[in-house]
Image (cartoon, rainbow, N blue to C red):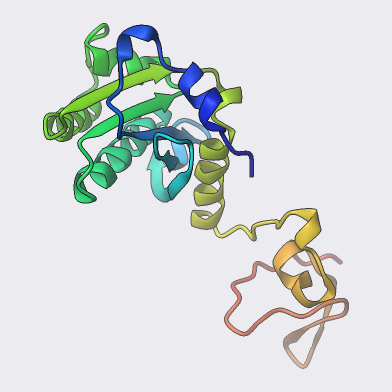
Length: 205
């Protein structure tokens, strides 16, 4: 997964942010396939030196992009509060979310109003908070986590990086296998799956 060196992270702050010496930085992303559709969020949390301290993600079911973006923000805030941190910088590729939290845009959607209120409650528990917008290219790891959460929630087998592939984990990296039915049971012809694996069968005649 891509990392974010401390120098690059600090470049995302504007001079007026003036973060305290000790603070967390949360790269947050959320998405929905179909909008609305299967959704999830991903959050990568670092300390002020750019060292990753946590990776958060969750499948949210059938929701909108904006709902998922807010849930990612709330997850970052809840992490900071639960672990006793008082300063948090959130970096999101959702311009709408950033502008609504800053008060530039009004929150008209009823579902988002509740989430916006929850976010504001958590922000009030911090001594210092800042939020900024970046293009998606600066948010790749959070985007990966959000998509992985959606894949998992949709029952898709996640594909491991190429360097992790080996004969021992073929079942983890492949999505399709060839098989044949004998005595009412499907027998795989070119691989093995661990007990309990959920599968969908397509019949080719």
